[in-house]
Structures are given as C-alpha cells and as structure tokens.
Length: 129
Image (cartoon, rainbow, N blue to C red; front, side, top):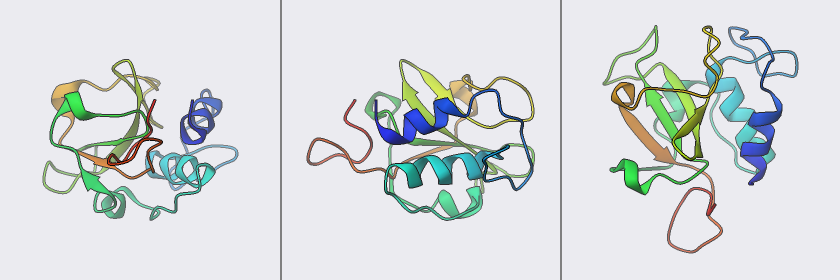
C-alpha cells in the first residue's frame, strides 16, 4: 500500500475534530492533507482548496487508490464541495466524518474526483495499486 493510504488507515478510530490536522483528531481535509504529506505531496488545507488540486477523474472506473473524492458535505454544494475522502481501492473510501462511517461513501453522493498523488506507473496520477 502507498504511504498516504497507510497513514490514513492508521488514523482510524481517532475522533473528528473541526479544523483538526492530527495527531489527536482530524477533519476531512486535515486527514487528506496529512496523508498526502506522508506520501511527499503538498495539498492545501481545506476541501474548498483541495478540489482544485490535481487532475479531474471523469469515470469511477478510472479511480486509483489515493485519488480524492469530493461530496457536498454539510457545508458545501455539488458545485462547491465541502467534504473530501480518499479512495483506497475495492470500492472503499476513507474519510474523517462526524458520523462514524469512516470507510463508506455512497457513490451517488460523489460530485468530483481528483488525482493528486504521483503514480507508480507513468501516465496516471494516483497510486498505482
């Protein structure tokens, strides 16, 4: 597994903390920022900024572990997502959420995706698996 995914998985069970960037707790974008940092990739702090990082992924079949998934969340819209999680493969998403559903996001709720982490294989952003 890639460093970002390993980092995120190691945070499971920690509390949701609004504005949190660890190590005690995280909010959604704080978890993604720190997990990406563990893989050597610098991302902005907030979901509203992270949605503009990387390259858009236009099909769920093109998602790679490490790609980011954006949803409206409680403070955003489909046009301006307020929540982010990381695809970890096998149809699973890891996220920091107030509701303890750390590894599930309904596909219908996803409004944007982005590849932000360098791939192991040339020509694709995201983790090569």
